[in-house]
Image (tube, rainbow, N blue to C red; front, side):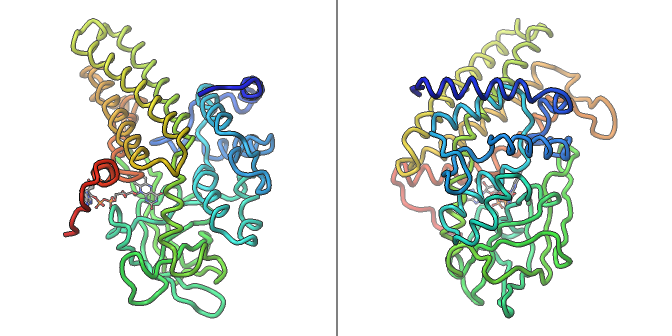
Length: 390
Ligand SMILES: Cc1cc2nc3c(=O)[nH]c(=O)nc-3n(C[C@H](O)[C@H](O)[C@H](O)COP(=O)(O)OP(=O)(O)OC[C@H]3O[C@@H](n4cnc5c(N)ncnc54)[C@H](O)[C@@H]3O)c2cc1C
């Protein structure tokens, strides 16, 4: 990616700001949070996120009229790379900033934009994503949660599952069936629902890592205002797919810097433990390094081509990174040998490598499983006929 002088100045400003800000009460937050570690220092990370927002470092890619900075693609890439490089903690407001915000900008009414975008930008309200249900994961069109009109409100009944961060969220953007008797993609609506109400029960799910960052969410006559539907009622599928198209995007580059850091630490560990002398492990480490380079090149190409030209590229990237990261976890267990199979203490006192190994089992599931990505690639890249539904 070609960088201009302004881009380099932007990078210098950001670097200085991060170095100057990750001090004092925020110094201890370096490296906190992220997949498998969302439970860590939540309140302190929230304070950090608000500090970022106050300095104008949230929602960089949003247009200025919606409170963003209208930053160029290059500057957004720089932001995510420098942010990850600085070791700053993972951001607690990313579902609002990266998924709902762009969705409201694309599909929301001016009232919805005015009501919700400033609070997302300032990290005053946190969001969760209510798509998956016990019977609707990969097959999202099987959503069975209903929302029935009642005066100037919707009344929501059903269950969502795997809802990340629902236990700390103020609001949920969810997909519900608003047209009784409708099937599949028809009759769904995209609703904005306040989480703190008596009709909603959030039950944490204990994960392989021993922590709970996702939840079951039960809607038992929960209510939201009638005008809090994004896009026309009944047209929620289109809006929901719009949200998915924003998933990851430029943040992928930051994720890859995080991977590079993990990989660098693993190479150091291999040197320290003597594992680097094992020819088979050296071979795997070299291959992992090649994988990182291929991912970066692919991500930059995909971003530069833009969403219209994307085709199967986002699916290719998802498969590349999820497999790579899972294999890194497996490689870490090999490098560290037999001791990696024993937790330091009970219950679940895992070290970073054990947590990475266990949490990365989920990488090939969330954000669309690898099998689903293969189906998309088969259709979009190879032009193969659609798979028959069982
Ligand atoms: C860490 C994590 C966080 C998550 N956060 C959220 C969240 O915040 N909000 C939310 O709504 N959801 C969230 N999810 C849910 C996630 O989107 C689903 O797990 C995912 O869509 C898969 O759905 P499922 O679990 O029901 O599995 P299923 O769809 O039942 O799939 C089971 C297996 O069958 C395979 N399979 C399914 N259909 C096909 C097919 N047609 N062809 C070939 N193979 C197939 C799948 O690949 C998978 O291996 C999260 C999941 C994880 C792991």
